[in-house]
Length: 425
Length: 82
Image 1 (tube, chains in turn green, purple):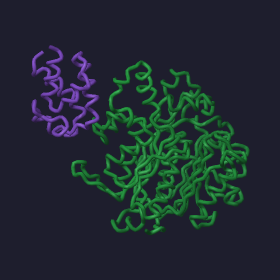
Image 2 (cartoon, helix red, strand yellow):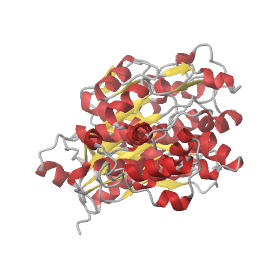
Image 3 (cartoon, each protein chain N blue to C red):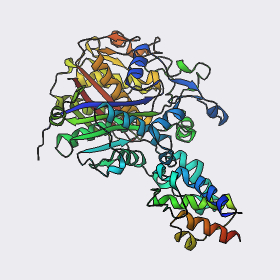
Image 4 (cartoon, rainbow over the protein chains, first blue to last red):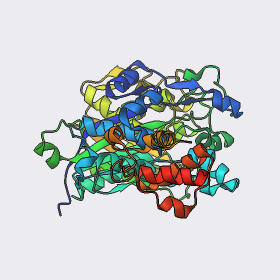
């Protein structure tokens, strides 16, 4: 078995709060288009934060991608994953074969994660009927919607995938971790292609716990597009988001054999945990582990820190943003004014939890492909701790035609970290 | 309730579960729900629940297990309502 396959990105799919599809998403990033809006159902439930990021027009879109029979057993988390995965598969130039051909693609698998999963199905259907003694009225569709692997399982059936199909979960690190795990699987020669990323639904039941923790911004309900404020002095918590982002990772050998268009190469990836020690906890990152994660990915990539053109950070708009930037700076060992451009896709779409890493990896690849770094909105009042980095934090999109390498990282509850390094191909 | 009327309602209930819609164009009492209409066998549970609601009847698990064709469903409904 080969153990050093080079791994490239040959397909992308994205369903984000501010756009669906690659052209629209790239445009939304360039324009600084926010996908954050007021949602009455959050106000009705007395949320402190009544704004969020939810993909638009999905009622119409889902009928283009999925049959009525398929939709009978799919919650938004699964629908989002399916749309992004089908898009990534098609974008990779692969043909979706009809199910009645009865063929399995043994060389392609999927790691599509989710942070919370089908808790909306549990809250809206499973729990009420079970508590009412009506278990026999639940029907057949509960398990496949509430099992953690429901999103990847559905994608496997839609595409006839025959390699590893699973759902990882590491809170807000989920999507990035999926990309790293899929990268290793292909690198080891265990699969030719892996769909990799994350998805998350948008239910009030998914978001309520975060609102209760008071980690969501409740000060901008009247001005939703100003609500997600990573790196700003007035950051007051993150804005919940939803959607899906999926990459088609493929061995370079396979991509060349079939003449696939290659967006980027995955140079390196690293995941770890801070062990809830050395300043880390269930909800806060151990700075040493964050730095080790970044350094591990950079070392595996075999690059020097100054070769990194941009950082697509985790940067959620909590108190942790300045600490995250400090960790990047320590990990890379660069002076603040020599750092890569630092930006936050969450300023535009909110924090899509388990989908965040997937969507933001798609954003990173599009930036490499098209040669730009999108601006981070709502941080005109830059946090005072970040003043030394001000020249490296674009508020508006900058064209970077020679952008070669981008680092994407995610950090999640549980003190878990993930970092992946992409190079333009 | 006439057999034809019951069959029409059964077909309406089956429709969203059907993975081979072309088979609906030639549907008859002999049409197999699983083999011809390609309904996922797990969904028979949902179809029985919808039949119970639509016709105001209770279907035992044993009776449900005997339903293989559209005609089986129609007969079961007529027999239970009688």
